[in-house]
Image (cartoon, rainbow, N blue to C red; front, side, top):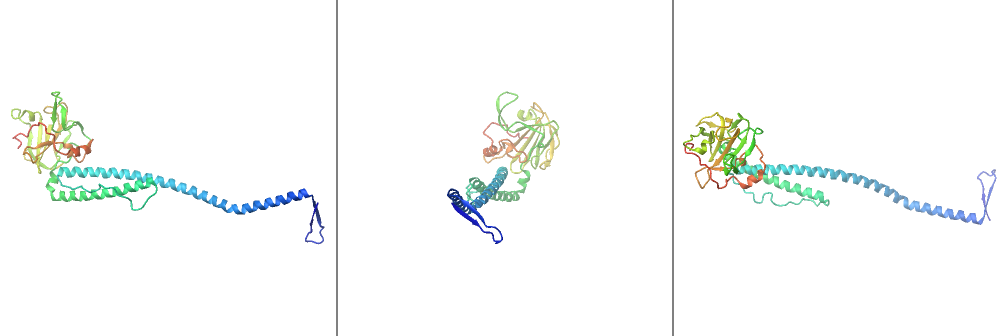
Length: 337
């Protein structure tokens, strides 16, 4: 048996006595030791718990920041896609203008090598985006260099720049391409033949425009007895442009110019019609170029020259270049030369 006495601070108060059996005393001692141990463990683990809570909050914040950064990265990638398409389009247009003007340009070493970002990036997606951005920066710089060269060439050859047939001969949005340049099945003979221009179907009376500055060398209809093939063109206008270009506008309803007249690019010379060998109203449009091998102007694909309209397969047209295949075509009649 154990006795515990409690003496109050006030001496007038009664002393209290507590009697504990050995068993109860052992339980109290055990409980005290356990409580002390728990308090000790709490003292040790409390900072760790607080740190864990802080780390959990920080981890949550980092996850949110990571999601935000990934969303920003996706937006940057989308922007890179748009810029890359714009640069590719500008490069195609630069190649086209260089081709039709005959401007020599050396593209070796311009934008053709990979560029590594200046800093090391551990996130694969971000590293790829940074590499794309660096490559795009290089390609853009190369394109600006080529554009400067092309601009200098154009300034030094202003007459060629004004005269080269570079716009669509009918207003954009008013036509449908029904027969492209090259081999086709003739609607009259049902045999394969070489089509030396473009057939642009449009409403009768649609304005026909000079595609470049030039002089009218023929306006009317070719006499049947002089040339059957050209008589089939119906009402036709032929322009001669500096730089060795000829443009032909056939099947016109009205001719609104005369031989010897000088036209500027975009000036109306007639209207779409259905004259000659024609199954429906359309404009037959040709570009012929005098090459180094012969004085006879050779048909080339007009789509290569038209800058204000984007054709399907535009890049492939440029790869093929502006030389026509070796096909039989009607030469320019002497009445035009």
